[in-house]
Structures are given as structure tokens and as C-alpha cells.
Length: 531
Image (cartoon, rainbow, N blue to C red; front, side):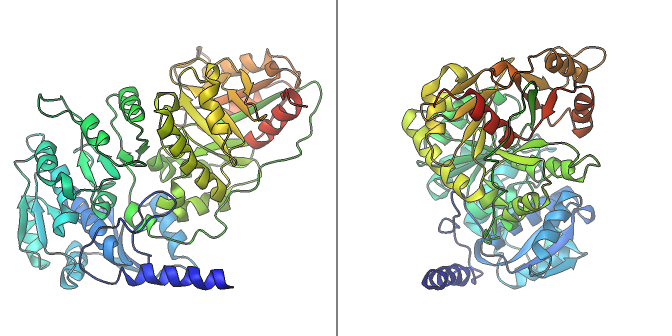
């Protein structure tokens, strides 16, 4: 009882500190790892279908500004999964919702309450390929303003916001970093294309993060490396750089900074402001799987769970699909949702059917190549990951790297964590041979053996599905050999549940499809070198 009283008191203190309309950094409010907004008390919702792109940007920066100091927050409803998370937060026992049909009315509400001192002027990317939207986003939290284009100034004045706090139209990220570096967050940077309209900008404003985007390096501006090198221990880089995925992750990993793909994640300020994580864990992993003799075991694992934007959008379609629940399926998901969107994570756990199982990935609570990380930074990263795993039950981890199967020092570090039970390994640009290795403590690392991915792994005129069917059916039906197991990695962007169903329908009678947790138990039972 005493513990409950203390927890309630601490939550009340956090909520009380959020009652002011005076802007303040959110650095004091963190979950397991990531920053969170003020505890959510109500939502003021507007449909994005009513808004121009410039209005979405302004409201996103306003949402981040408000989440710093108030539980009465803003939510931009995109429809689809966005509406699902809104219902999850506002359902029975949830927060009250007020819907707005007017951009001006919503802005005026917060301007009159003193949340907004003025605006930071910027030009959208479509004008001179300007990066000033990133400059404005970074300044909003520091100056207590909203980001506005020249076209919005008249409308903004009608809402009661008339003071220009800064003109970012002729500035870029280099200028911003040179002039405001000391005032920006020391544990978070946001790598975000200026072409991204409003996604993620709310969270960047809430955290006072430096928002930048890689472009041709100048002699006096070393870009991403300089920014990430200056961050504190345990920092993250949100966003994404789609022009060179390998270079981005390799660079960040070598500096000990995990990337967290979030560039198209909506409403993270409000979603992170949910603090209820009681019972937020997936079902326990199987412990006593029963081995059948004379069969070949298969498990399917869907890719890209490290991508928080995918978690909040495309992944939800797997649960709405007409085939959901008709066969066992592994889905990678980011443990960072525990802080950033616990309501969405809870929805997934609540709507999982018997054959669904979630795997942390890749490569844990952020996208890293662990073999590229300095040893001490990898150790610290894995300690943070294990805290997530202990709470969420994501005891299986997908790693994306190169050469991991021949690097026991790295995979051994993962498997030495007390709450991580196994690794599913997918090599970056590697075909995968289905090898299975064991750490000294008897925990396995399992390599992909087949890939269901359009254009990959020998797709024929009959499709990649037929190739995977032939591969599996030709393999030994012997659970006492590593050759008797196939881990199929499914590319979420090019293959859906219908493609998986086609593969399953083509398999021989002596093939068994099981969820990842059962697959791991069978591997341990039948292949472990430990007595």
C-alpha cells in the first residue's frame, strides 16, 4: 500500500508541474528511456482533412508546445490507425475529447490561454528547397512560438497571434546549430527531411530537439557526425534519412547513437503523454512446446518493427486483415512504444490472437548495427533495452547487422541480458543460411533461412511465394537438426498476410508453422548443446 501512495504522489507531482502555460523543457519527464509529455487529461482533436499542409505544421508545433506544460493537448486525426489510437485513449475510463472544425478556433484557444508568445516565420520546402522549416521547428520550443508560413499570417492574426519571434526564412540548420546549440536538447536529435510536413515535429518541439537533415557536407559543416558526436551518453536520434540507410545507421552506430525511425510518426507528443503502463506486456512466451517427430518447423517474422511510424500506421493493417489469426505469425515491434505510445502498444497486445507473437526489433529499442557500436556504448544500450524487455515481455529480439553469426562476442552480449531469451538474426544484404548458434548460457541466435520479399531470394515467374514453398518442402523433416527449422523473414512493405497464406497453403503435410516463441522453445529442446 505504501508503494501505491508513493507512486500516486509522484504522478501528482508530475501533473502539477504541467499546469503552467509557461514553456519549459520536458527533460524532467521521462519514461524508461524517452521523453514524455505532461500526463494527458484531455484531447482537442481536429481532422487533418480540414487542414492545409501549412496548417498541419503549425498545429503540430503547437501540439508540442502545449505538451510541455499541459495535459489538455492537441491531436491531429489522420483517420485509419490514427483514429484507432484516439479511441484507445478516449474509450471507457479514458480522457475526454473535444472536436474542432476550425483551425482558427483551435489556435485561438491556446493563444488566449497564454501558451503562444508568437510565431517563427519559415518557407516551406517547395519554395527554394528551403530547410527553414527545420530551423523554425527547432526554435518553437525555445521561443514559445509556432511555425508559420507567410501565407498563414493573416489567419494567425485572427486567432490572436501577431508577434514575430524570429524569421527563419533565410536560415538553415548550420546557422541554427551555430547560434542555438547550447539551448537545444543534449540527449536527442531529429534527422527529418524538410519535405516532411507535420509528422514528428510535435515531439521535436516538446523536447527542444535539434531538427536537421543531411545534405552535401560543406567545408565548415560536418552534419550528422558532428551533431551526434556532441550528444550525451544514452542519447537517440529520431527521424530517418532515406537516401542512404546503411550509411545513416552505420554512422550513428559507430558513435553509439541508436536511430529510431519516426519521420512519419504522428502525434507522438500526445501519445507519449499517456502514463498508464500497468499490465502492459504481451502474453508469456511458450515454455513447454511439444516436439513432433518427422516434421520440419517454420516460423514467419514480419520486418520493420523498429519503425515507430510503421507501428503506428501500416502494422495496424495486419490486425484488420481478414486473415488475421488464421495462422501463427511473428511481428517485430519497437520496445520504445512503451514510452512513446503505450496506448498503441496496449492495443496491439490486447488484439493479438493465439498465434500472434511480438519480437523486439531491430536491433532492440532502436535501429543499430550492434557490431559497429563501441563496446561500452553497446553495453549501456543493452542495459536500457533489458529494462524495456522486463516490462513489456518482448523477450525475443530481432537483430539486423552483418556477420553476426560469426561474432559470438556481440550476440553473447544480447543473450547475457537476463530478460532476453533468443535472437532472430536478419543480415543486411546477406542471404541467410538458417544457422543456429548458442551463447554460453544456452540461449539461441537463429538466422533467417528464407526471405519472403519481392525481388529478393530468387523470385520466379510464379512469385517469391513459390520459391519459398520449394525451399521449405525440400528441407529435412528432422527437428533434431538445424536443417529441420526455417525462419522466414517477411518484408512488410512488399508482402502481406495473403502472401504468407499462399506459402502455407503450398507446404507439405510434414511441415508445421508455429509462432516465434514456440519455435525458440523447440530449438532449445532439440538442439541446445547444454544438458
